[in-house]
Length: 140
Ligand SMILES: [Zn+2]
Ligand SMILES: [Zn+2]
Image (cartoon, rainbow, N blue to C red; front, side, top):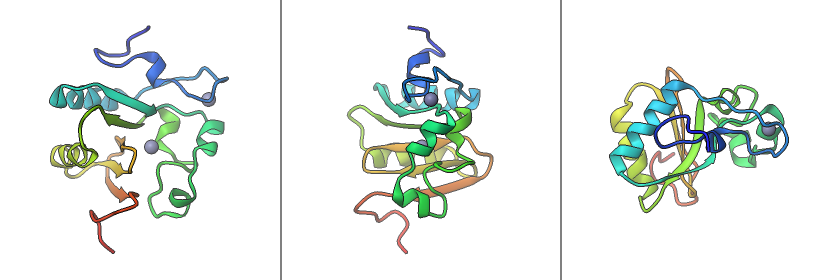
């Protein structure tokens, strides 16, 4: 297993489509994920990181496709450059992970919270969304 950093492997970073074998990770995101991994001292389960365009198109969910920010699931998806990651931290509440990220990165990065976990991207400006079924973070 090729490591791309202390806690993350090339396999975790690579596209999951099954046939492109592409990969790529923004170093700012790798560093942010290492800090997060050490803060919680618990394994990070990666759902999706780098995505080729075909895989990214298939990853669009109805909700995010119509949303203002989306889940990074359009042509401008940060996943296409490995600048976004979908994950959860083993044994840690998603809301706690979200709180950690927003306390740390107040004016930048995209942070989305879902029932399955967290999307983080290292965009220079700030973006937030809450796609949980029972959502109370950003009341309408
Ligand atoms: Zn692919
Ligand atoms: Zn994502």
